[in-house]
Length: 564
Image 1 (spheres, rainbow, N blue to C red):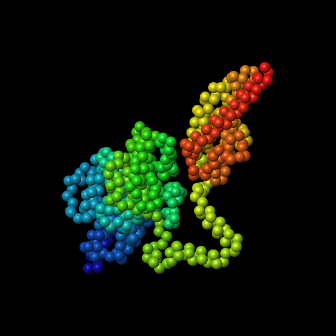
Image 2 (spheres, rainbow, N blue to C red):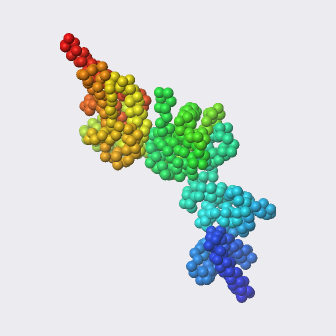
C-alpha cells in the first residue's frame, strides 16, 4: 500500500515538473499569465489530491522541498505559497478557460456556485474592443500573484472580490494601494453619497461620476481637536495633500486652496479646487466642520455657476460640487438637492479618533484633564504668570483675525495673481484721464535697492514665479512718473508717486512714498486683497496725485499773477 502511494506521489511530482518546464519555456511571452496558469495547475493538483488521497500539510511540505531541488532558481515554491496556489485554484476552478478567446466564453456552461459566478463575471468583463484577447489581457491575468493572494486573504465575499479586481485593473493600483482601499472598505463607501447626478449629468456619465465619489471619506491621517475650525481642517488637508488625493481616488488633480471667484463687488472662495482628468470637470470641495445644513447647497450652486463661467474650457464638462460635512442627514440632503440645477454631492468625512471606543469610558476626558491641570497651574502660578494669564483672557475677548501662516511660495504667487496684478492693472487704467494732462509718462517696478526690473507687468509676473526671486526680495515698488504739464508752457513741472508693497514675516503692507505713517493697507497672508481694498488704495493714490498737481498749478498761477 505504501509503495502504491509512493508511486502515485512520484508520478504526480514528475507530472508537475513537466508542467513547470513547459510553462517556463513560454514565460518570456506571457510571463504573468503563464505564472498564474502553472500556479493554478499546481493548486488544482494539490486540491484534488487532498480530496482523493487525503494529502495534508506534511505532504505539501515534502512537495515544496522536492520541487525546489528540481528547480533551485524558481521562487514561490514554499509550503505557504503552495497553499495559496491551492486556495487560488479553489477560488477560480475554471481559470484555464480564460486561455480561450473571450468571445468564446459566453458559450461555456458553468455550475451555479459562488466561484462560478465570479469566473463567469470576470470572463465577460470588457477589457477593450478586441474580442480575441487571450489570457494575457483577461482580467485575472492582469493582476500579479501578490495581488491575488492579498485579495484571497483579505476578501472572502465573491462580489467584493469582483469589485477590487475590477478597480485594481481600472486604476493600476499597486498592491499597497489596493490593500489600503480594501482596509478602508472602499466597496461600501464608493457611490454611497447623497447626490443629484442622475438628474444633472447625462446618463452615459452619471454612473461613472457616482462611482468616483464616496461616503464617508476617511481622513484618518488627521487628528483635530474639538475646537477646530473649518480653516484648520482645510490647512491640515493641504499639508497632507498627497494622502488627500490618495483617498479621493484616481483622476483627481489638485489645483488650488481658497480659489477666488468674483461676482459683482463680492469675492467668493472655494475651499479646495480639483480637476478630474477622466470626467474633464472641475471639482469644487467645500469643507464644513459641523453638520450638513441645506443652505450649503445654495452656496455651492453659486460657486459652480461662477466656475463654469470663468474657468470651464471648451472641452470641459460642467463643474461638480462636493460638500464634506462631519455628519449628514441624508433625508435633509435629498430635499436640499431636489431642485438644484448643478451636479452636487454631499458626503461625510471621518478623522482619526484620539482614543479607541472601548477606552473612552475608562480614561478621563480631555476636558477633565485640562481642568485638573488648570487648577494645579493656578495654585503654583507666580504673580507674573497670573498677570500673563489675565492678559490672555483679555486678548481672548478681542474679536480680530489672528495670523495663521507665514509667507510661502504658493501664498506669494497667489497674492500676485489674485491681488497685486489686478490692483496694478486697475490703478493704471484709473490714472489714464490724469495722464492726458501731461506730455508723457513713465512707470517701472523695482526691488528694495531701487534697481529697475521692468515696465511690463507680465515680466514681473514671470519673475514672481521664481522662488529664488521671492526669497531675495522683501518689497516691490511701483514708481509712476508724469512729465511736462501741457498747460504750463516753459514752466513745466512733473508729478510722481511710489507705491511699495512690503513682505514681512506674517503680514504684507502697502506704503505710499515711503511714508512712515499708517500704511494704505496691512493684512495677514491668509487675508486676500478684496475688490474694496483695491478701490480704497486706488482712490487714495488718485487723491494724492491730484492734490500734488493742484499745488503745482496754484504755485504756477501765483507766479504768473506776481509777474503781471
